[in-house]
Length: 345
Length: 217
Image (tube, rainbow over all chains, first blue to last red; front, side, top):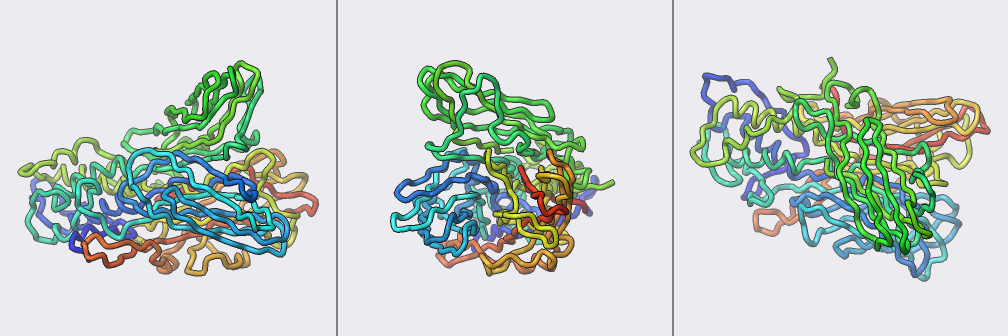
């Protein structure tokens, strides 16, 4: 137990409604108050999935660093992130890879294989140098040492925020001191403590405990997806479309608005469009302007939100699929997509 | 009726918590019950994250190196690790709802075995025999489609296995002492195995998503 006492439990406690009835006083420090503090700390301190495992298929070549860009929606309280890189070997040889996280930390990982197609999942913990709750671009890099005789591929990338053991009770983190809610203790109002602490933490959790990343995709600049098609063409295989499902927030909610970001560019005097179309009917078109240098385009997209009355959470018994397409509207060159990020729902 | 909701209203009640935002404000039963208990329960029910969203670029598939008719073989590269949440109450894991778009390359039946397990300290070990997995962490789904079928399964780690969760994240404690503190993380692994009824036909996956869901109570 720390001096602050804003412990973050691995599971939020089950909260009882018994004893909370009109006409009866709400006792200060009744058992559910401490539980409420723990539940709030759990929501604020456990972390989100910034980058669900995404398939990137990036061949690593000596002396050619791969940089992948992702837009993420982090939580201020989470100061460590778990990065998972999955490599696939090509041929039988030795490889030495270096992963550099967005805060500058590095992990050198070498492997040797006797057969092609070996799979290696490599974990790395990033100490976040500048924790923030703002949407931001992260751009980790992967490199292959010049001495490597093998030629692996980076197959998947994932990034998850790791939980905190405890939070500060400062207003930035909104942790609640559980000790301030001992049974039969007095009710009082102070930041991070007692009833006011629980109230503020609950309000903040509505925003902070969001579904961080639902779909991420990235290529490095040299292998960006390109199009010169005169009509929309699918970014992925015709039948390969991510299924999205947002967090249900309010009692009457049936959709959830997600943030969509696409890192795009266009050749000289060339114009394009990127379109996102959901099975549920919503769509979003982002414009790649003439000769645009690489930049993030942004928009909002409504998707189904979870239905808690069914066993798998799907709404209207459907998979809300997101078809992603792009094309060249005009010009003689190509339009490119390097990254797609969908989240904050 | 099936329900994954533990809250009284099945949704966040707006405005209520904000009424206790200053010293001297009244704390009444409705405010406590709706604005705090209900809201915290609902937010916890909805705290699940997407943990896998794999869509192969053109030219790539999730498939075996060769069709296997008798023994489940791991689909190449089809293992993903992620932190998994623990539910309140029964302390089993959040459910992992897996969606796959899959087919078989020619005539036959493609059968996929989805397996979720809690990881201990031994990271990077050889995947276990698929026959060693048992419910509720394993499910089989199959298709005869040669163009694409939507397949889904719901898996979880039982409470007895959650006990293997190990401290992973180390921090300096917030008490100012500088002493280390650690937060327990349930780290899980999702794997996909496959077999084909036809030795000439490959099971293929063209999209796989996995999301955490509070699940039925």
